[in-house]
Amino acid sequence: MLIVQKYGGTSVGNIDRMKNVAARCLATQRQGHQVALVVSAMSGETNRLLELTRQLQEDPNDREVDVIISTGEQVSVGLIALAIRAAGGKARSFLGHQCKIVTDSSFSRARIVSIESAPIKEALDAGEIAVIAGFQGVDEKGSITTLGRGGSDTTGVAIAAALAADVCEIYTDVDGVYTTDPNMVPTARKIDRISYEEMLELASLGAKVLQIRSVELGMKYGVKIHVRSSFSDVEGTWVVPEDAAMEKVVVSGVTVAKDEAKITCEDLPDISGVAGRLFAPLADGGISVDMIVQNQAYDGTTDLTFTVPKGDRKRTVEILKDKVPELVGKDGERVSYDDEICKVSVVGVGMRSHAGVAKTMFQLLAAENINIQLISTSEIKISCVIARKYAELAVRALHEGFGLSLPPSERVGL
Ligand code: ASP
Ligand code: MG
Image (cartoon, rainbow, N blue to C red; front, side):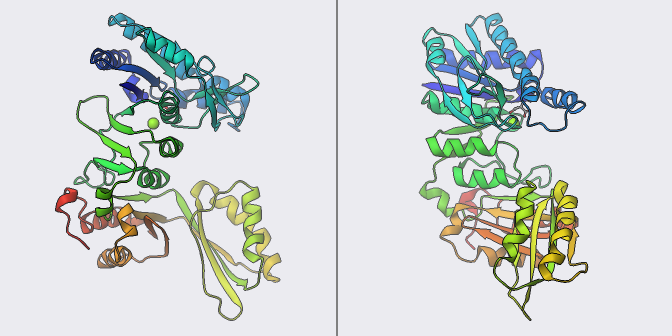
């Protein structure tokens, strides 16, 4: 088999851990497999480099910022290659431009356009372990680019796709993807298998194990992703195409996001074009709006409520206070906000074929006396905005209520 192993920052956090990585990949190779590694910067290093650049340059979307923050991975691949050699193996390191990970020129958030797999294959065929720098690429002009925070996951999956690898193992400091944050709910369980789509929802809802883009790539190219711990041998979580067994599990995971704020615009005229005009300056300002709820019009006016990243709340309100009087044709305080909210969500592909998930979710929250402020749904997700002080209580109630503390086979139907 051809196996890609991606090691995150904590897995290469010091020389001892790097020796552990060397031992692991050599053991895999001895079982008769070809092994390509993708490696992150040592933990804390990218933050340290970013902090240095911030003292001189606020905007990370800059060619020179990427020159600096990509160096953490260069150090890691060199050290890992040395560690493999010290353990008696053969290794060759590759930087982004050496295995031609070509990206667009969006510095600090570049997207991969193509990968030249030949140099990596040549190393593998020579019995070497290819050690590839995560997070970095090169644009058409030859400038170094980076793929956004957590981008080594994406390098890992992209390399696995380019090499048509049998599996992309993502080694991290947790042993898989959990039904919810185990720090919040001690009975949270490791999920054995999850579909790309569910993982995508969980990642967009704030589960930090995988960069969203890596899951998108995995889904597009059918790369089997195995999220597991570099500190143990236990099986982790497989992120794979959806199958019939997954449909039976109604809810796979519960998440909470605490980094959004709620904005309400009241008494907007109920005429065509208002929402478009309201959101245009927000889009121009690069503010990404998440949940949007508009009420049924009453008396010729309507209310619009939505959420934005908390860091953008101040700017959003300023922009809107500018725009709303113009829209409604009169002055007055018509924009309000609430920073003390959170968004709890339940995710599961089984929702497509099971009725009553929303009802159960609302009843579980009601049983704890939690008021729901906003609701939004997708085919495989239901999200509710509630007061932030109830975040933990809500997650625990939903996790228990949907039976997630039990193995999937023992959960009762709705
Ligand atoms: N070193 C980069 C970061 O910290 C990329 C990664 O670790 O995935 O975001
Ligand atoms: Mg990571």
